[in-house]
Image (cartoon, rainbow, N blue to C red; front, top):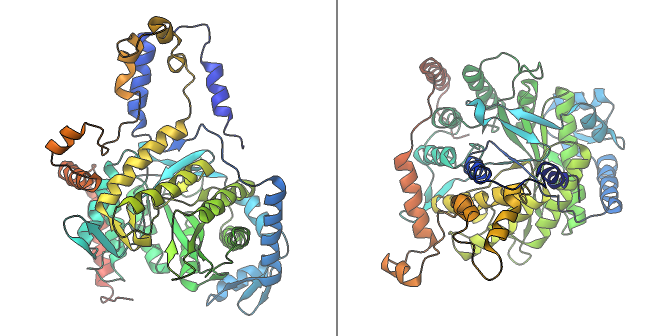
Length: 528
């Protein structure tokens, strides 16, 4: 079941079996529960859920090496990338690279860190990615937004800023994300500047840079350097990692020049890259779980190894995004069993490689935040947490297969990620958690509502949803019979009205705006 089970054992050792819990213990536990709502990341205390044996995992690793050796991976339109592989000893035939068996894994394990710190503008919000840690980030890349008030429409910069603010205010999200939605009211070649600035201005959480062109990646690095400075990380002696970035494989088995160029920019600056095969199984991989897993591992290993050749020791994350498709319509489907099995298998394989893992989220195909959206998202998020995903992209807001970012869906997903905090914290075996004094105080045939332990713990005894309605039917009707979507609509508007920006050094703000103005003036508007 993995090594996470030792968290419970450690709690047993610290419980102090002979000591009775006091009111002070209970109050301390309550304060801890309140603080957990804004912890910088989750450190899991429950075991990993495994679906494959050692034999099964070894077989899939063997199959991935067969793909890398016999079939190869295309590295297109990037002569430098091909030369890097040639010098490393790979067999380069045109734009296709074949790898000696075990080569990619060895390159990754030789230098890639098992975990790393991504620095936030507020050091208290730094995230450690890898190990037993889980980081929740919002959804990414949607050109549309949806709200109960306006329905579905193209996203604007105002929406991007709104979602950055909502993510900043969400205690259960640890990360500002990246392209939370595409502000289509801005030119393609310049909108990344406003997006990066929005992350830096309206949030002090860690965030993601642009990958749509190498020069946009370079802009992201430059703006991060303005904000964070260029002094090295005192713990590693390497350039400070203040960005994490999504490098998608063009599955099947292809890297294009855009992704390779962005990966090189970030790797050379010691910024983190998430190497993620984007797979709709049945179209971009075989229809089977085992075939999809082997292909995903092969594609990811080649990208991870490439980054290590560019800059040994640069932080990397092994990513997996695998969805099934409807074999009748070809449309992607979410929340189904097969992608969950892929996720479980890939999480175990990433641990064996020895690098952090990215996958999962709150994924659905529904167009609106309805019952389909809820159960498909839950059926993706729960396996994400049980499997041990370290960086969870698309944790909040995802609708319509990722085409739409939903305001109400965002608030509903934030509620669910809050529940996952409690699940991953495991069972409290402290003296307060054991509650023996409470059981002795109440005894048989009575109730616990008025006992000292309950009174000391009731405020934070259980997860309390900000959206679920648990009142009587009569009270619900008296309040206008609002459903979950209507309650979420009220909540996101209330939060935006209460938003207060985190402080930003005026000199840094001025330097960022000056950089943006110079970069925008240097090129005409373009939608390419």
